[in-house]
Image (cartoon, rainbow, N blue to C red; front, side):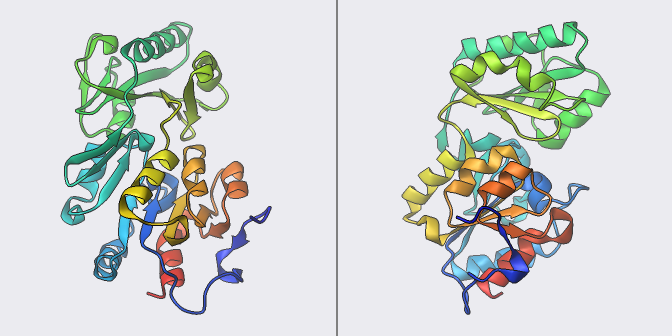
Amino acid sequence: MPATPTPLLDLPGLPAGPADIRLIVTDMDGTLLDDSKRIPDGLWPMLAELRRRGVLFSPASGRQYATLARQFADVADGMVFIAENGTYVVRDGVELSSDILEPSVAGGIARTVRRLVAGGVDAGAVVCGKRSAYVERTDEAFLAEVRKYYVEHRVVEDVTAVDDDVIKVALFDFGPAEHSTAPALAPFAATHQVVVSGEHWVDVMNRTANKGTALRGLQRALGITPAQTMVFGDYLNDLEMLDAAEWSFAMANAHPEVVRRARHLAPSNNENGVLRTISRVLGL
């Protein structure tokens, strides 16, 4: 693997003809979506062509399954959704895999967030269940951020007492999460994953859960190899899934660690980088 990814347009390793790609997995925010959170218009005809060629397209996101299913509602048949950073994988409404947090752990994280808030940190917890997300904060500024990623969400009095399988606890910080709230969750890192998944988001999951674990399970189930897999990502929660594909692309706007980890570099999310790269590699 090169120390620095090769820019797409100068990539010497690209084949003369279309590559044998059977699975394309892409992160959403900062990767497929532009900075205005829009899906590129060209994706829809491209998905039809990929389907015709027998190539499976799979969104892999920290977003909730219900949110992803709504975004791709018109083309969801047969699509695999790697939701909640790999903790919940669903195809045609059927769960393929999940990684459930112990209730005591989810409760401990929520209580830590409460202490941060009591100390003056402008943050809030989102307890992510299979059926819904659950929050205690009721102010519109916080709920507006929650709605971006969690179509199904409920305001409850106590997020530690929800009747649902909890698969992740997400923390939204109106400040820079990597330098403020993430360190406060360090005690959980000894036994669980504490992942900075965006500028303002930190996710806590089981140590076994990540997008890469979910992707490798999907590859095994479908008989698809890393050499037949193309992956796109931009942030730290994408690192493990980049390792699961030989065709791994960091976006030009990606976190420096993601750029170091990927094999290749794609144009930025605001330059339609995912679609341009797919077209170039598959000869569409």
